[in-house]
Image 1: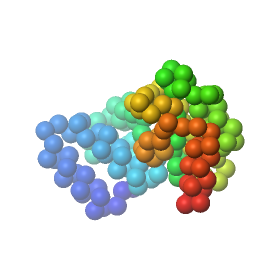
Image 2: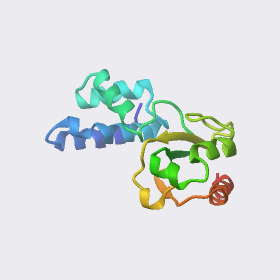
Image 3: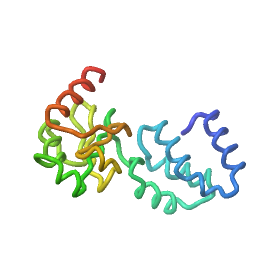
Image 4: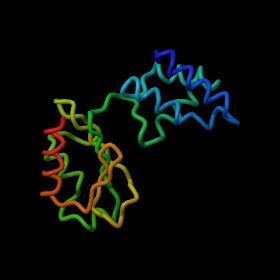
Length: 157
């Protein structure tokens, strides 16, 4: 359950909106910030707050790339899996990251630090090959740059 102060703030925002539905993503992001991901309970909370059905909320939650329906690591890596990044890479970034992290796409490392998610495009073709980590863009990438980035994050982690 959301803290009462956060719930009241969301209710105020929803009441001020012309259409409550325009705040679906904002509400889901607030719930995700609280729970760490959008839990089943959060889907029902969002539906209740917005006057929508849980299915309508689920449709948005499963469509939007930055909403997570299951637990994720501290650092969520969105790997560009587009043709441009393939063309600019010595070998596919996804393959490199799977090897370096020891996980498959969609998985989280055992230490809970990294979750690896391929996406069709992140919009950084001018920096290809590229990836996002917690929405921060990195690129153009080489295997050495990836090593430095992961090492730095592990030290922060």
